[in-house]
Image (cartoon, rainbow, N blue to C red):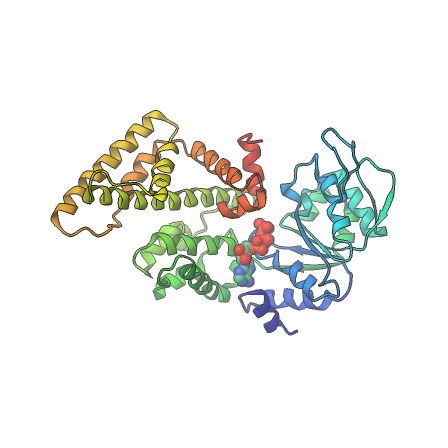
Length: 421
Ligand SMILES: Nc1ncnc2c1ncn2[C@@H]1O[C@H](COP(=O)(O)OP(=O)(O)OP(=O)(O)O)[C@@H](O)[C@H]1O
C-alpha cells in the first residue's frame, strides 16, 4: 500500500513532508514486530500511527488494544495491563485477564507512556524483553505475543534525567522512533485540514459549509496552533456551530484566535504543559458555550410556541427536558434569579417581536445570557459539566472525554481536581 492509499484508507489529511515521512516509516516497520515510539506534541495525530502499523501487519486479524496510560489511576494500572488473581487486593472478587493477555497475537498501543508508574515500567520492560509477565497477586509466569507501539508528548530525555522514566525501557520501546511534526511546521496542510473538518461538521450539524475569505486563510496559516490539529478541529467546530454567516471574515476568525497571535506575535508561552493546560480549559469553556447557546435557542423556540399557541399547550418530552436542563442546571440561587430575569427580558423582547410580525425563530444575539452566566463560577460549571458527562456514560472516561471534546488525560486531571470519585 503506498502513502496515498494509506491516507485514503485511514482518513489522514495532509501532504507535508514530515507527515509523509512518518507514514513511510510506519508502513516500512509494520510487517516486523519491532517496538515503535511515536512522539510529537499533543494533538498532532499520534493515535493514527499505531492503527496504521497494526492494520498493515500480519497481526491485523488479532486484537488491537489502545490504552491511555495517563488516564488509568496508579493503583490499578498493573492490574489493568497484566491482570490479577482473585483476592489480589481488596475488591478483587474474581480473577481478570489484563490487556497484555487479551492482546495475545495482536497489538497494544500505550498512549501517554511517560505516565506509567515505576513499578509498571519494570513489568513492561520484562514483557518486552521476554514476552513474559505475572498477574497481580500471582506467581505464575504467563507468556504473551504482543507488539507494542507507544506514544508520548513528553520530552523523554528530560523524563529520564528526572528519574521519571527508565532509560532501558525507553531504548526498548523506541527501537524505531516516529516523529509527527507540529501543525505550525505543516503550514501547507492547515487550510486543507480546515476544509476537510468544515465539510465534516457541515454534514454533522446539517448546515452549509463554512468558508474562509482570503485574508482569514492567511491568518489561519500563520497562527502557531499550540494545540495542533485537535485545536484546529475544535475551532472549525466552534465556528461551524456558532456563526450564522457562513463566509468567515478575518474579523470573525480573530475572535477564535487570540489577536496578538494573529498579528504574528505569539501570545502563548512556549512550553508544553502550559499550552496543554490553557487549551484544555478553553475547550471546556467553548463546549459549555455551545451547549448554552443550544439550550437558549431551544428555550426561545419553546417560549415563542407558548406565546403563540394556547396557554394549555402540552409540553412534549423534549420540551420538558429543555426546561429541566436549563433550570436545574443552576445551583446558585442568585444566579438563578438573574437568569430568570434574563429570560423574562428575552420573553418580553420576543413578545414584542412576535406582535410585530409573523413569528419565525429568531437566532438573536445571546450575549445577554453570557453576561448573566458570567456571574456563575466557571469552575462550578465545569465541574458539573464533567460530572454529567461521566454520569451519562456510566463512568466510562473514554466516552465522557469524547463527548466533552477533551483528552482522557485532561478528564482524568479534572476528576482529580474536583474530587469526583
Ligand atoms: N492528518 C490528519 N487528518 C485528519 N485528522 C487528523 C489528522 N491528524 C490528527 N487528526 C485529528 O486530530 C485530532 C487529534 O489527534 P490525536 O488524538 O491522534 O492526537 P495526539 O497526538 O494523539 O494527541 P495527545 O498526545 O493529546 O493524545 C483527532 O480528532 C484526529 O482525528
